[in-house]
Length: 496
Image 1 (cartoon, rainbow, N blue to C red):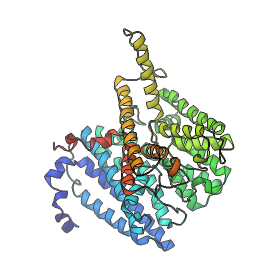
Image 2 (image 1 turned 45 degrees about the vertical axis):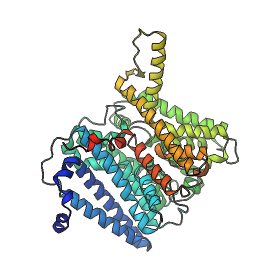
Image 3 (image 1 turned 90 degrees about the vertical axis):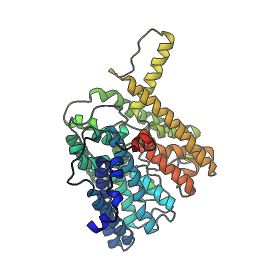
Image 4 (image 1 turned 180 degrees about the horizontal axis):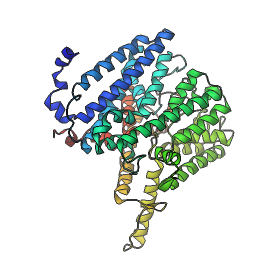
């Protein structure tokens, strides 16, 4: 191994070390190890089934060698005090490179014959988007299906996996890696110390996954189906082992369980820990109530407005769809394109909504919407009485001016990204509804869209340029825009 390392002096060179600090290299090492272990599991699955084992064996070997080479750049060396710049670089580079690497076994196995499809599918897995370019999911090797579920599961808990390796020395920068997608919407974590935050968050995630597995087994899913869907729902990802997604089971029991699990996965981990420790909801009550009421309202209105041939027949069907889209899980039981226009508009609204800050979901997040509405209300009041001092509040908690500016900044950047993505897909030949909904579904990490990219379709018809653009939007949404955009600034790459 030392001989291999000596052939790659740039890995250890001072110029790279100055720009890509020890925090980033530790994070990349942890991510490489996670992917290597996942690929090994898929290799065993492929050997048992007799399909696609070689592709995952190569992936495991490459990831393992990469982890070994990276570890040589920081193991046994003093780690300088990380900064916010280090945290941004660690989060942005690790998610980007992990997403690209996740497509390797899909390309080698032939599941995605085009390179752009492999990148798209891998990015969709790691970012827990759940959009797929596969036309026939049912016919894929079990190793490929398991890899898709594992990339979801790694992506959902990915920041925790990174912090297991870097938290002891990273301090405040580790907090930026863990909460990079929270965009500082809330300062509370499950514990004051980062080491405890990592441990508790990982414990909650594992518990949610185990509960999902047992619940799905209880309603009749096979162990294979239950394992894959448990990882998918715990991460709010949406990849299924069936082409028809959750609708293939045609089971009210499965639908009830998945609805409850999706709703639970959209709740902030801070709330779950507060409830476990019997500290109540605290300042999170208004956000939780808004989240639950929004899903219930959209679910009921879907039944009222969806008057097509496959419209939700019951409130439960509507709530399932509302929970799936709002949390970004993306499981489908019907095709919204066969519903009424009012229902499809509600689907678009739910796509942009998102669930709670501190969960594995994408989208704007409920707290950010509440901040934006509060900011608009405050500005209207200032126009009426300019001398009045108006404080934006969520419930009784005041919201800082920085948080208000960040929320409006997020909205502005999201609008630009949505416009650019829609123009890109329109240039690829898609109609406006398909282009806009596909862009929103990818950027907000939902997965299924409307029109030609709807839940009954796949993204296989999108040309290579469109798939690469959507892959970028998935990363942009998963890291809440600014972390990815920071990678394109000169200051981030300037040596210290």
